[in-house]
Image 1 (spheres, one colour):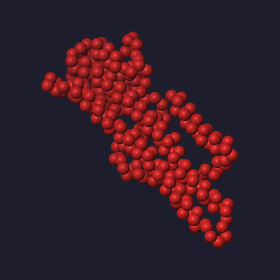
Image 2 (cartoon, helix red, strand yellow):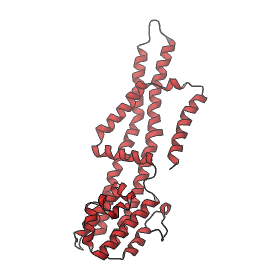
Image 3 (spheres, helix red, strand yellow):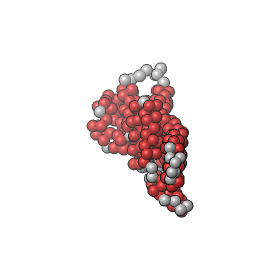
Image 4 (tube, helix red, strand yellow):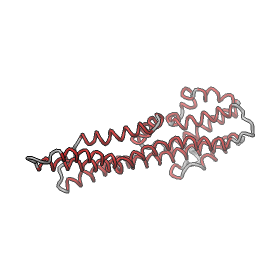
Length: 279
């Protein structure tokens, strides 16, 4: 939770502090026109090269990035608790008793007890969709395990469009920095001839070089860490979905809710390990 603020602080202090120690003036790095060119083109290429659902998913990941850890030990424990409660209800009252809970999970007293699951949209949908599937009493010829695996693959492939798209923009940013630098050089060339002001020419060249610097900085110190953080979040989501799938598969095969919880608990990653008394 504290890693991101510390990392951002270190990047900022290292960049600006190092420049000051070199004897630089921070105002010489401030060129709004360069930012408009570089970040404007970057945002435009992102919008032009990606479908709308990638934009919305990107905003969700951005929110998760600054909100802190989304997948936690509590979320794993709540997921197992919710699954066990639903399984026990179906065993005691029949599988049709689940219908009102999976049709409207946001108003279900069982789901509402596990707010962390409701907040995780992909997990909630995965649980609801698959209990709804089981309510239809599918034939044994339909391999439920493969069905679960295919869903997880589809969900994660959809998620991966976000880091792949943002990673592409990160690859292009140094080039956009060069574009801004070339524009600055063009303006500098217009100052040559006649009564040349050497100071103004030096400032213009410095501004052009800042364009290249800005593109490289945003590519490797801003977007690259963010892309990696998204990939970590996706791997965590995959593990969470695989734990849920292990429970659902066991439940569909008729094992007891307690054994299904144990099967699911054993799929929890070591960093989120849940003691048996908490499962």
